[in-house]
Length: 221
Image (cartoon, rainbow, N blue to C red; front, side, top):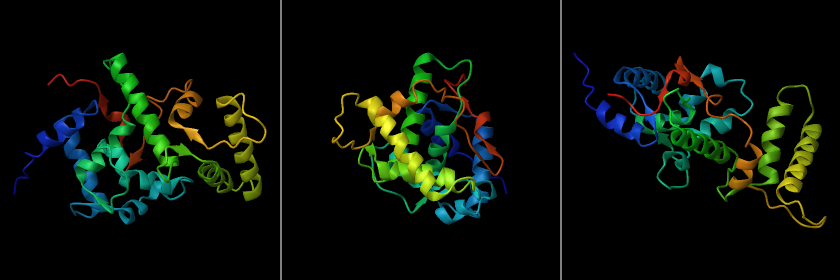
């Protein structure tokens, strides 16, 4: 039986909303990978993603998986989390990892950078209060450092505290010794990563889905 791919046009329209241009063939391939992840079901759950071997030893595995179910990453101004997601929602999250091309305009590149930064910020702002608190930041640093086996938990905690203090002194230069730094806002987050080239470095690979092959920019079709 021939597979009906009429839904591709609807998915393509969804992609274009975020400057994410893929060909019908690429969408078919992504859908095949989605079916692999979901065991041919219409939705995938956290349990499906937890089975991916490439994520097994990733120190921020939980944050990566949670990002797929975070409603903030669906461009609909919603908060909270999905229990399961369908293919279009999966594709929307994958779009955050797309690289630019030579045809990407400066306006599109800037929009892409901001989108990637917001995605990363959401990964660490786990309680969705608009700031990355010391506890949230400390947890990420502890996981990154302590799971490598090269450093103990207490040492990782001390490094996180010192790093947050440095961030606070940079973002609030006239902060008094007794002042409490509430956390990193998105504006502060942008400033911290201002010199880092995010557009092409942030990509991911799931079951042979390489987002480096996804094109960004206006389609010529």
